[in-house]
Image (cartoon, rainbow, N blue to C red; front, side, top):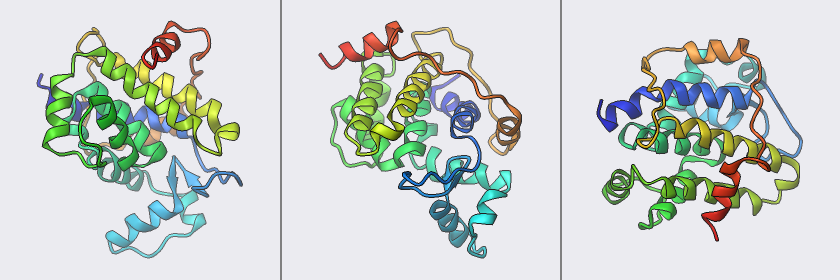
Length: 226
């Protein structure tokens, strides 16, 4: 299985992870993104609807967003926007989740910093070549998650959301690392047109996230910055 094929196959698994952690409808007063459902903001849904020639959705529409819309928004607006099919699978998984959390450009900039290439938020030939060259380098992967955690720590909303963000970042790191070349993790085949992850996420219980204070992973991430 090639790296490109594996990255495409990883989309459904990555989407499963995102939907487990994003949950359903929320409208936290301190969340700058405003109302969200399955992690999709109203602004994002409106932009997608506009590009597809559909009426502008409101909050009630967001609450009942069809799963096929959720799937399409994530596949085109995040996975493909970050060149998920072209990246090594473990990096694609991590970059995709960060893109959902902080936007594709931010997720790509953090990747470029970890790869030590030009930082412009755009995935081009230089970024892809560096990602493939360091696909089997766990220190690069650790550095990406460490930079993600550091980014959260600089946000003014960290006191409110920081613990959840940090737990999610570490959980993402662990699940993505199972797909890395240095691990014997399961490679999950995805159906690019499937909508199953959305249905499963609606019914699935919330999975506990790992402790970020007691794991060797946390120490490893911290050491990558020292």
